[in-house]
Length: 130
Image (cartoon, rainbow, N blue to C red; front, side, top):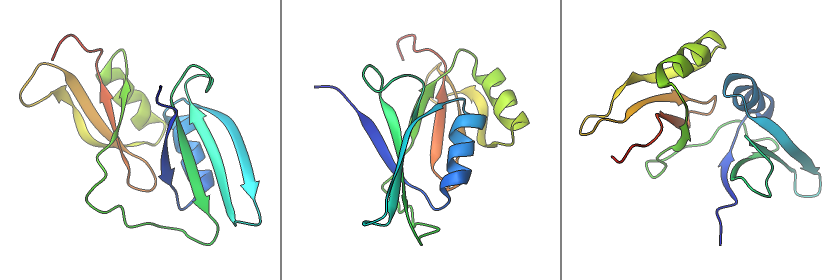
């Protein structure tokens, strides 16, 4: 078994695609409209789906926002330098919601950004055992 993708429902597909591709540097891997079901699926990631986990963005036509509830946590991305990644994301218009620094009870460096729908994305330094 392997993890294929994580699905997020998005209210504005164009804004979400811009965030994930232009701000976070992912690639749009595939996109398909389903007129009979009135939805669009777009898959984004850092590599092909055959060997990488990706994010599925689901846009239900006519729905422009969702209640995220209190069950969602975050998607985590490993970056070489959390401080530089935050500077780059901020320069591209991204919203940093937790500035980079050490985690409260460990030594990992992390930060959080928010996508256009309010989903949290954690940026983590390469893991070294905590």
